[in-house]
Image (cartoon, rainbow, N blue to C red; front, side, top):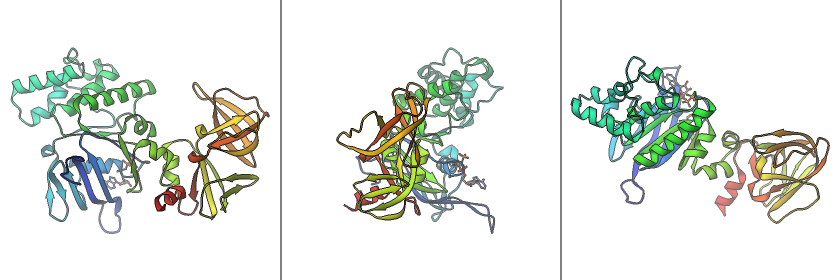
Length: 376
Ligand SMILES: Nc1ncnc2c1ncn2[C@@H]1O[C@H](COP(=O)(O)OP(=O)(O)OP(=O)(O)O)[C@@H](O)[C@H]1O
């Protein structure tokens, strides 16, 4: 794939392992990770705390050396354990934005942005024109003589992004940039990052534990658990066709029912669902997202729907513009999206969109529908 015109690989991790520590006290932070991020792509690395997200970014930035494997940026091999190649961060041409947007408090916005160029000993007049250019693009050219404390939260983000972009990096790395922001600022920061990506056309890699970042920003994403890349794909596939139960849980709310699968019938307590599936499993886990089910007053099943049966409403919760109805059904409790609240104790008929129902092997966590589709 490397070098081909259709998929210009801008960042490539080839079988990368990172082990911290020595002797008995070692931590395998990354375990044979392979990843191709295309030129101009917005790639999100999603994972729980301690999964290895920050380590991946630090390896690309050159702040860590891989224990094994190779890292390429563009056509340049920037790190190879076996070939003993290691290009330091200042020669990699990457820009990084950290979790807290970390501006130097004692420097005015101008000097914050100019800092990476000063370190590179760029001539003063060139620094001035570069800072102005990027500040104009980010609409902060009028506040360059202010200290960070004199800037709004949104302006501080722009300054931090400008500082990462002023060197004209080939790759922009963002480490949980929204996690410390309140909900309002988070939304504007996401929009800003998306806008920058469009404007600069820069290959961008963002790490986050928040699926909303992936859903709103990513062209593609990779999910990392315990140092292992579990699945790479477009956000919709990760959401609708997760490779395993852990990913299904990480990327969004999902109802989980444990039961048995035999001859195309899933049973759990008094619930029976017929499914287009061939495998039999003694211990199966059914997963259905709240928005993939609906409640009805009558026993009606439309094409493409599977009936779950009659249930009783326990409570209706307001969920911002819609409602979540909690229904007891066949000895199970399900959370179902609805456009209006339904009174407690009312009987409802529950259906699910058949091709959105997920089935996992309880022992391995693997999504058996993906496996069956793959083997077809
Ligand atoms: N310098 C280090 N020395 C020893 N262990 C480390 C070091 N840096 C990271 N680790 C370990 O490597 C693993 C992966 O850490 P990493 O920071 O990459 O995870 P993360 O997914 O970014 O987590 P978080 O979301 O909490 O930042 C963890 O077990 C962590 O404790």
